[in-house]
Image 1 (tube, rainbow, N blue to C red):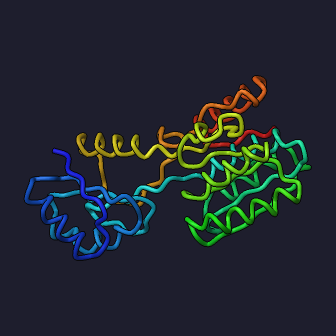
Image 2 (image 1 turned 135 degrees about the vertical axis):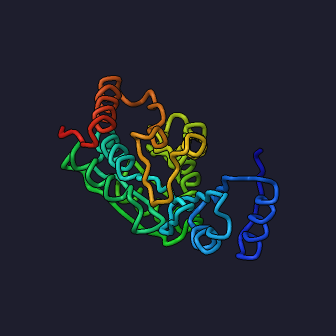
Image 3 (image 1 turned 45 degrees about the vertical axis):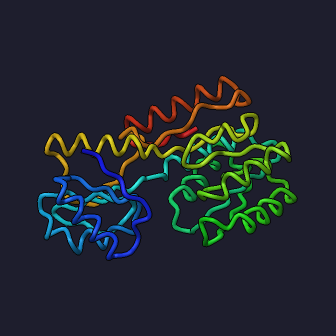
Length: 256
């Protein structure tokens, strides 16, 4: 049985939804983001027949599991590609928050691929502030940046559309965003939420799902880079794919 409820936000709504699912015999409940963690942890002991799963949080219990996408490596490979594809030796990363793992990875990847590249970084402290994101993009563009990595759910689309108008490159975020501007988006750092749902359900069915804080990455098949734009030279596509394969197998980044 699969049931879905949308726009469940408050504690009261969550408790009511869990009770309804419980009465239907549901034994696995997903909360799509970190918001659900505390509420799940508070009520989990009352529903020992249910395993609660949510994403990117810090609460766990015997029947509560948090899965967090480890996106440091995704940022690293986005940085590698940006470092190779810039013609001006200036690239920009527009982030929502300072804690995003992609940021440090991006800097490391850029410098490994091309130590001469200057990285411009800006934080918006907001996932959805498209106006400020566009203003930051324009400032970076005027400063000479020609590859952009916008890591925010809403504003990544806006920056990619602007990059297409300005004929500069971008790296997509969260999903394969090549359909927005196929000549501009070099690749995307993808979080396969659908695959994670399948992975969790399989673990549950096999009796292997435990209450813990767990990170997932390339090795788990839920983080990847989207196919490369044809603008990326074939030789470098090969080099990138070899680097990703090496990381997936060893957990180590290559030294170029």
